[in-house]
Length: 245
Image (cartoon, rainbow, N blue to C red; front, top):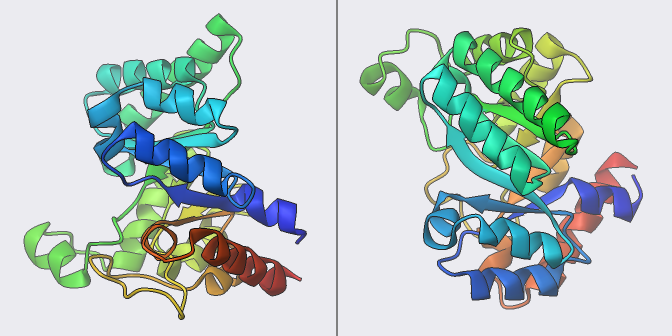
């Protein structure tokens, strides 16, 4: 993998409180990072203008709002995201196949209607903060985490979704179950030389994620909380390049 290919596959989580901070980060790191993730924290504070301004900084946007609603509302939310020009967005697979199918239909209809670029639509499987104990005892899911992720990934693919968000530990089982054309985005990336796993339970290094078959990796705190974000981002890129040859 060339370094530019690695850059396009590296997504930085803009988990900050205000747009000014997000813009500073995007301008600082756009030569190292191809995609910037805007989640509920920043979007709730700044709204759609956050997407517009980060795109103007030269970065692609992953809109990480994890839509989980009745089918019509999910579809309409996806349609609005298409209008924003995002590169990637997500829904919750646990919303069910009817909701996911509606989201796909809404996305494709809006792309045709507005002649917009088709974004990548991903389905969230099991959050990286969910442990096996939480899954079984609190959420009352009888499957173990890997089997639940596999089940949700297969359902997402059958619904026409482009790929899934899955933890590092489930990359290989999703790839085996859903094929090479199914997109896998992996959060929970923690370099062995970086910060601790904190609230994320199922984590791995950039190299291991690429080795396992991830198409995109998401990283946040190890870069944002470092004394030298540019150096850390460059080190992550090098790890991705070296692993993929």
